[in-house]
Image 1 (cartoon, rainbow, N blue to C red):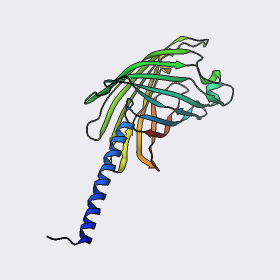
Image 2: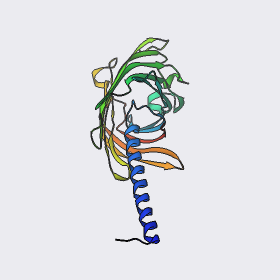
Image 3: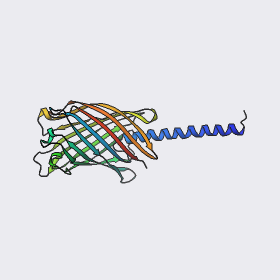
Image 4: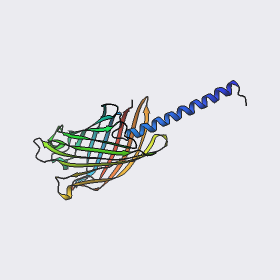
Length: 267
């Protein structure tokens, strides 16, 4: 079969576009999995807004915007330290403060995961977690320094990203009246779809060991959807989800609605 010059040009164009699009899709698939991996060796800046509704007898609303920069540090060819900071910007309703609505910064947490650079089929990380009394109002924080341990483990078979993150923080000083002994467990299950969409569930389960048994646990269930897209050359991970608290403290929220924009800076 012979091709004229026009046919050759068209064939070349089809092959180029197909190859280019396949490479782009693969790149986005890898980017999606990295965005869903808490110990990925990638700088990112997530803004996660949580709206907690149905708080107290008057069904008040709490808003927490978590600013969560992730900064990896390469120790050598074998090991990385993945640092994660969470700085909450809070709006607390009257039922939680007794002084009307209070707005400002809450207490920050800082975690440093030691993680192997090449962990194979099972990715993991362990390290310390610290609580920093950065709250701008006593009603927005515990006025305590805290420290503890955190661990994460995950696998990424096929289109899935499945894992769990655990931590426990104890107070180690500060002038606050209430001691801190807080357990956090976040399991996450993501299924990646075509065109950079994915399904997700990532509830944050907590236990306040200092509280009575009726006010100890917060257990949400739910999920949502996300997508990787670009504005210009900047990749962004957007996600929206909703969670119902099947167990919560007496004045705790009934529902949590989560919206996240994560700016990704792959190497």
